[in-house]
Image (cartoon, rainbow, N blue to C red):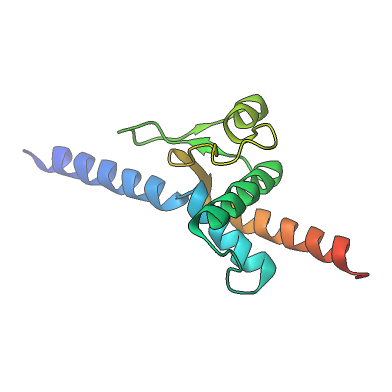
Length: 130
């Protein structure tokens, strides 16, 4: 292997690492957002309740930030359309225990930060008078 091949491989590894660092799983992002907005430790009693809260917060995040799908084994992320997000996240009411799988869904860290600020600001605006 010559130097140029070595550098190309190193740059590819750096690019992949930067891409991985740029995104965070939607499930983790939803949990972080919930804690950030409520400013209290989780009040969910069971794992099922906490998962339901994460699902609802993921839906809220999807309204203020782009959501991406990370292909299995891939290094990139595909931005989802509003229709795709709707099909993946929204479900009819009363379908207890049938939450969508958030495993392959991601959000950019920068979008997460601005989304959390937007959701927190809306929470303050809606609940200010109570």
